Image (cartoon, rainbow over all chains, first blue to last red; front, side, top):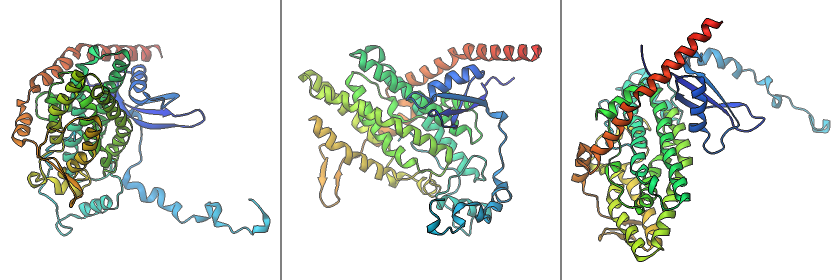
Length: 94
Length: 330
């Protein structure tokens, strides 16, 4: 059996009210150690108030080659943005 | 630079006509400053070269803990000790960010470690010099980290996403390293005559090895063009070395210390300092393994790896046992 510790992806909540953000990865034998290591590697300067770790092999990712079919359809849908609509000035803030 | 003499894989820069369609599209993305991410298509030589470069950079951070670790128990005050500990801990962190970036290219952490321990991969020549006095902690922070910053700041814009992001994190922390070093130098240079002498001695010993960190002169640096076209090398060795000298000489003057180079002179016409090149035969000799501390450094890493083996195995066995018990209970 391979004896390298599994790879974990680390997500940190920077401040209260913000969402967790991916900051990097590390190796650890289990989730408990992954959180301890993440605290040492990624929060040495008050970068976080909460840590999530997830084993990298559990992450499903979209493929770069699907970029076109996945994201191009939204490019033509300009009406999804509020600036598409001209509202007369006299209507006031909207 | 923490990565020196990286051999660029491949046959050199190809013209658009020589490139395959995939290579052309890749180069266009690099030219447009788009970041290349691990799952994107990339030339095999780009991948190989980056593994060498990021791996060597990571090894340098890890081995770089040793010369400074040498002084943790002998720091002159508790405050200095806490600062040095924090700095050495940062170096470990930098190594880890970089190993993770290299791993996204398909090499495993154990493979990288094994290649360092077998001598197949190198680390920066600078860490093969000894740290003989407390003033060396000042010189290392000021000059060695200063030289590293010169190279790492432009690398924040490198084309490979994970490498660029690691560099951004590292640069944020690196400025603390250089300042704490200069702070030590100021204290020593303004101290007793004996302390000032120690500061001068540290500068004397670390000046040329620091200049060597940028790698050989451009005329002898045959692999640069392809790495620059791929944006994994952002400036030439001589450009960065000149920038380092221009920035560092006034800092030495402020300390009242003398840069150990009788040919050092401001060149009005060029707008730069003229300076002597380091002894390149010494540089190649250190890279070959014949520096003052090569054997000690590698032995320390091997010992740490081998003596940590039972801890790594035990923790993994414990984690597997716990996971199995959890499955059984469900």
